[in-house]
Image (tube, rainbow over the protein chains, first blue to last red):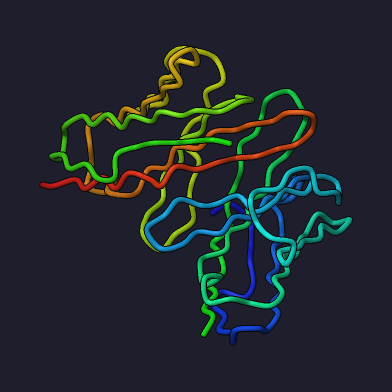
Length: 115
Length: 112
């Protein structure tokens, strides 16, 4: 167990709705990354937050947005949900010290189904 | 961007050795990770290589050649619990812009 928690575990939404997913980082970690994993695929990088600021983004549209809070917990928000947004959403936390230690610890994920 | 290629599936016998290859193309390489993911679970960290050569951790070893854009994960003395998907991921980190890109994963099935 990594100490990274995510909520909710499962979620069903309708196309066009908005969703907020939450992640609580491992104690002592200052960086959180979000990934989308479709069935049978590897995780796709959405974005990363370091000390409450976005410092990297993958090829996802602006309707995917995020926040990192002072206690390093994080939210992923997705607006105007589409059917293709159905996936497992993974949060990973790490401690960034800019000396090459980039090991990430993943949470159990939130399974989002859009109907 | 990154192009990361790894085989889709591999099958091996309990006690045997399996080597999972990963090739990549990236414009700003800062390291390569291997993760293990059991069905329905989150990925767990196995190894991180940023310099050329072999890193050994018990039954698992990972090799990197930056000039060839190539890595492999070696699993020795296979056990049934090693049946999982193995993900290769490349870190691209330039000008404080961080990107970690995963391959599609290699599903390893260990047979008795």
